[in-house]
Image 1 (cartoon, helix red, strand yellow):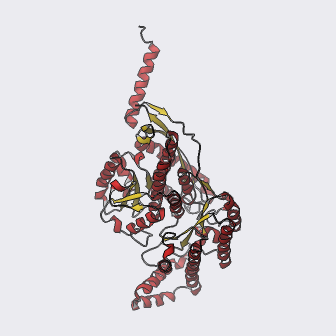
Image 2 (cartoon, rainbow, N blue to C red):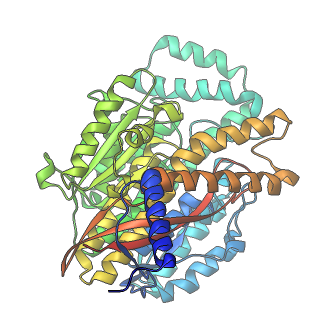
Length: 560
């Protein structure tokens, strides 16, 4: 037998050094085969999306989860949509919907987009009565031209706080008190509240109060008309969402009136839903479409990180966390069950605040145990003050929890947004698992879901709670408005891209790299690992509040 050459020995030593370095940095080094993820897309449904506005939660999130669901999503050209404070081209969108409906099976339609031009424009009540009538006629016409085309519509009850404008700014606080008192008087008829309201009305211009009141009256009429269209079979389903609110306020009066109307029409019980939230409504409608058209009802077991969590009312919410959870599960087409053994997945709700830090580590250990036992878990990471130290994810990292085993994660913005997003991702992924049989299809499904999961880690945690606050402080220090970047957009965008790239590399090394995920294929269980992560990011609007983010993962099979 010939002796090994010096070159061969050098290579062996080099690979040993690399393996040791990888082990030190990332843990165990596996013998793995890279996966070619260029699988062909097979769609079973074509759905139109007319979004609430052009922000990623209302567009990109729906597009990515539709892809996981095997749905081809058709959206208007970007130039037709809104751009921050510039409303969409409403007339062009109405024409687009009528024409494109002939190419699709169903549609998710925001009436606020078609009537006002965006969520921001709806807060200013930009649409006229004629706009409302034109949209109602349009929906009727589309149905008459294609009776088999299913329209899933959503409409938003305006937020409690009056719209941001130069005139409104000095009256926002008094109008907030005015709205809350109106609801309290409507509910309790307290004489002292009536006196306070009378005194307050003397401090606010009549036209501002009239405009605010008229906005809700018009919204109630619109939603009543949409409910009638569901009853007539013109619309397949309707979700009435509620923009930012509190336990008391005029939006709640609207909601109660609509709930009363709905009670008079039991035939609409599973077709019309009244909920809280805005940005996630199109997503939950997507889950509703998937579960109803595929006759799949995911069973969901809900676990809270703290005993009090279910009954807490979070900021910008008019109700408890538990109420929101129940609403979103029902809209998404799920069924809440009493134990984990009956469930398709566990919905784990962390309600973080500065007062309950003692429960973080036990919660992380509980969640780690559930994942290690093979349960599918969707994590909702809520924060009372939207701060990093209230989140559970960093504690999971400290406890060395295998984050790629999660099937969903959300912690962006309000409680309703986060809960709706996590439930939708988990429901759609669970349903897709039942439809994929071949190994390439399953691997492609896991890759898509892992990439959406990674986007949520990077956006909901690292961007929203670290990078965004940091960048805003830097901007404000030099007197730049984070909500109006103007000529500073490109420089700010570049800084954020660099910071997010750094966060992505850190997330890869600390939480994603080389952590096995088991896929149950028709050839038996196979393990895959994440071997690399690249991201693209940009600011979609002239502000720092949200980010467009697209991760790309490299995967490999573990050879055992």
